Amino acid sequence: MQVDFIVIGSGIAGISFCEQLRVHHKTFVVFDDHSQQSSTVAGGLYNPVVLKRFTPVWKSKEQLEVALQMYYSFEREFDVKLDYKIPVLRKFSSLEEQNDWFTASDRPNLSEYLSVHLIKNTNKNINAPFGFGEVLQTGRIDVKVLMETYKKFLLKKHLFFEATFKYDELVITNDGLKYGDIQAKNIVFTEGFGINKNPFFEDLPLLGTKGELLTIYAPNLKIDFVLKGPVFLIPIGHDNYIVGATYHWEERTHEITLKAKEELLTKLNTMITCSFKVIEQVAGIRPTVKDRRPLVGQHPVHKNMFVLNGLGTRGVIIGPYIAKHLFNHIEFGAPLDNEIDSKRFQ
Image (cartoon, rainbow, N blue to C red):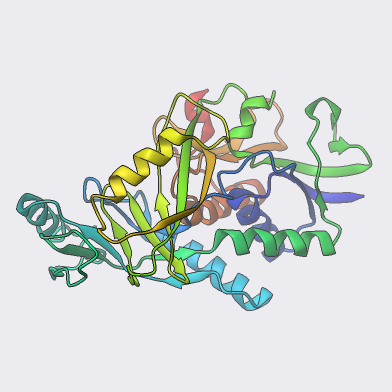
């Protein structure tokens, strides 16, 4: 088999890059052993504002434009629903936070995302005496449906190999790469935290941040918006809600923990007053970078080997954006933004 690209990983980064390849009529195969779960357990929320500090997300406007177009095209082609438009309401904990919000809403790079109207709480099951601020242009991507649909598509086309990629069996030739009976011009590693086992990119400073989420059943809550307080509370239908997430930098396993559950429930109980039932808990390791920017670029020695990683907590909007930039860099020689170029750490 001869292809233009081998892609390692089929999470949000891998799917985003494969979609660039499909749009440009490039051939490819994908390897994934499902050892990484950061995309699988992602809440899928897209939100252009850092709500802890009321600051804009890096290149939020550009990210949203590229990402939402990709998901829209995906929905049309595969006849699935991915993009659920839903407002995000930031719970204020004091009058000072209200003032900080309205000050931020006057800034040019935030004015289109922060509503200037204070929303009073009318839900007796929510503890919010100071009301809410509404974030605009927000929503949720159903990451589970995205990944399941794409895997089925790749399997049907015989483009998906559910197997661990063996780095020592990759042969670098004068005119490309060879892996088993597959010959390729380029290879792109989109492995998330799994890159720590990749001998070609093991020196990149990718940090693993473990995150855990809960799914709860709260039939009396009845909210149709994302509630942001000490944690996010995301409605997913049928009175079910995602609660998350934790951030732990020391432990790097996919095992769920009682400590994380208790932490989430303690924070949740400061936000809502109705009864609920925990129906699921999941864990994953986010691929984060110390400067909070992704890792995109070319191997310093092997010029047909590339990395697309470090999506962190905002993978659903940043993934399509950086995938487009990497494709344009590989195929058209377009320069990478210095803030995301992996060479910044060499």
